[in-house]
Image (tube, rainbow, N blue to C red; front, side, top):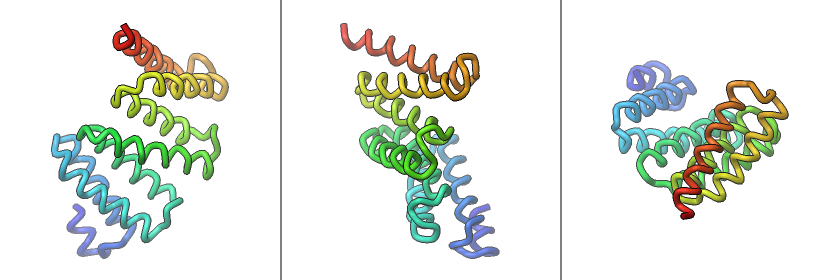
Length: 161
């Protein structure tokens, strides 16, 4: 698919970049993490160059790359990207935007994977509070955030003792 887009639309067409991102996602699902990362790094670079660093598609490409880095055990790199994306989303979309909250939750997950459970809990507590305020206590996103926080707290007890 990405090859067809390259040929038909050109290497720099937004649909070609989307097709590449989709290919990377498929590779990631198939356990071909290294190949996914190679493609995602190119997509991020191309989106930054063609659309700018603040474009929503560029930010999404960074989120996808961070996710792949996490899966590959490159936690420090994932955290660096997630911290930047959270800051960008807060600046561009506001602290209460759903994408900001989701990315903040991703950052908490990266901290948790890195063994920084205290930082993960602090961030996840904020996500839960914000989701309760914005969506209500029974919204599915709030319930998911609360379950993630509970899991982080449980993990924190396991590692603290």
